[in-house]
Length: 175
Ligand SMILES: CC(C)(COP(=O)(O)OP(=O)(O)OC[C@H]1O[C@@H](n2cnc3c(N)ncnc32)[C@H](O)[C@@H]1OP(=O)(O)O)[C@@H](O)C(=O)NCCC(=O)NCCS
Ligand SMILES: [Zn+2]
Image (cartoon, rainbow, N blue to C red; front, side):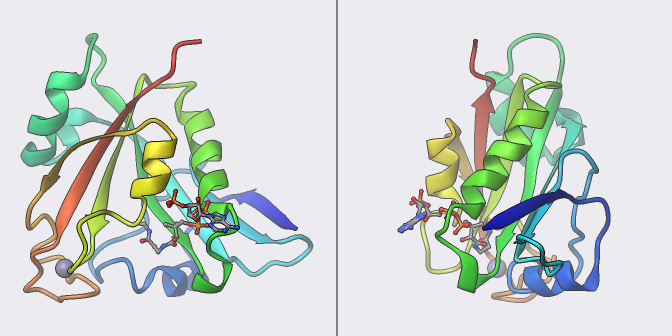
């Protein structure tokens, strides 16, 4: 029913899909090879997309580094990040989010030993929207960084944002 494609660049359709979940100042972290979008088979319209990248832990904000550093073993501090996961509301709960996790983790696992998520915890909720998916794929919640997105133009609360970031880490499963 669905077809998954490599995602290489930002388009206005993807921006439209993401508008309720990203601040105006945020950009889509599209790294070709680690990012995908989905359509109906034979169609061209994106129903959702997911991005990820590889970065150094010292490029993360100090609050994230403090949570993550004690868990990283070995000297390579290069880690994978799952960035945006967005599925159009009409197409949620059909396994697209799960497939996006599988596709990205399969690529990231070839390159790095750890993958990180810093997920938006929307106002009035306790958990990130991806909490269930993250846990199913073996991510452990390290903590929630309060007021993480202040000043980013949060889609729910604007510049007065107090939303937190749930920080999840997953170690590559040993084979
Ligand atoms: C989070 C998100 C990407 C998940 O995408 P999705 O395609 O709905 O994900 P899936 O269908 O693979 O699974 C989602 C949940 O639905 C459940 N589900 C899947 N198919 C189902 C079905 N047929 N019937 C009932 N439940 C089902 C899964 O078990 C899963 O539950 P869990 O989260 O408790 O583990 C999507 O909800 C979304 O875009 N949300 C808004 C954007 C957002 O908040 N993104 C995350 C921050 S960047
Ligand atoms: Zn907010």
